[in-house]
Image 1 (tube, rainbow, N blue to C red):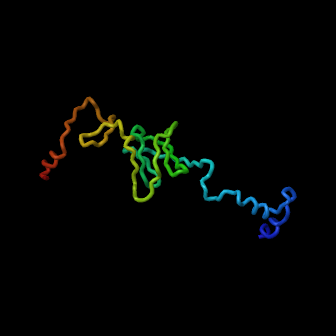
Image 2 (image 1 turned 180 degrees about the vertical axis):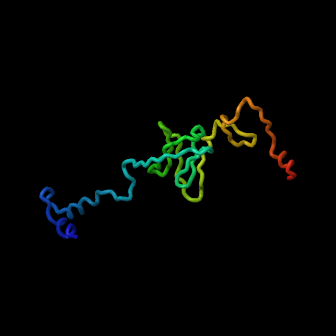
Image 3 (image 1 turned 90 degrees about the vertical axis):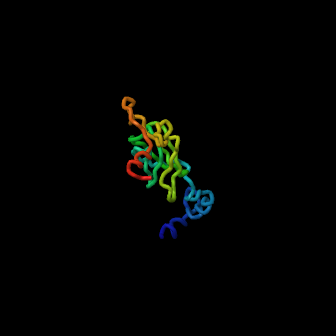
Length: 149
């Protein structure tokens, strides 16, 4: 109250203007507060990669390359509303921040190099031993054994 009514109307000895008059003059040159900052603002978080190659952020899931399964990665949200995912040295994935009902954002490149089952589903090659031969058969055989159609 005193500041607005008294102090800001007194002439300053250096500028030879009152702070109120000086502010009115400079106000047109100031940026509005709702614009994008001119410097980056980062908030880093750590996430563990699930066995199906996802990290979770704000209730949504984002894919990462399969080789990071089980590892902890750093994530940050950028000013242009993207999620960047880093290992210790580099950005390994980038996704737009999802809004709405969508829950998963998948980059199919993250699954390249995984072996696939006969149904085309990815499976990690470390889980399969070349020494053990396993018979692969159609699921229809099991349905017939159960008496299904």
